[in-house]
Image (cartoon, rainbow, N blue to C red; front, side):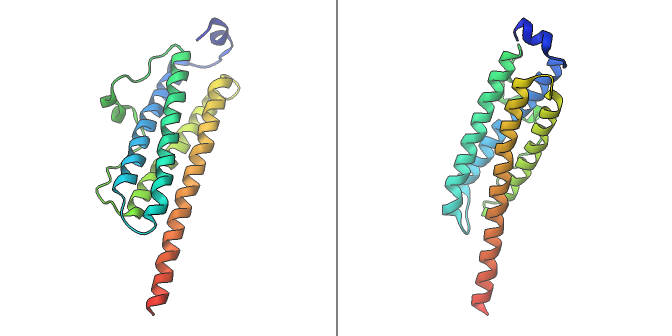
Length: 170
């Protein structure tokens, strides 16, 4: 972090770097969860949802890149060992033991909701104190809110599809 940036930042930079590293671990886990879920997923609307999950995965990867860059700008060191991701992450990322589309989507939804809380925390911590990190956190937060909305829409569509099938059977 540049001298002027340190002088004007009215926050605990070490704590912020820790928060950003926790978010970084979560982004890597989210990337993998989306990516592997898209690959193994089975069930209704799979062909429509799979490409969108891969888009979400790439957006999580882009978030990780933003976080790494900001950690380095702040004079910190990003997590260097992937084995530490689970240790740092506060959000749970589930192994897709059940490849059914709704299970995969519910797992991703849980991750998104945790990420939303994470970026709200970072935004609140940096508001009025570190404008660059605040802007980055709110931009990522908006992406995570979009992801949550997408997943909720897919789950609703699958539920409607099931109801329509029941009507046809009657």
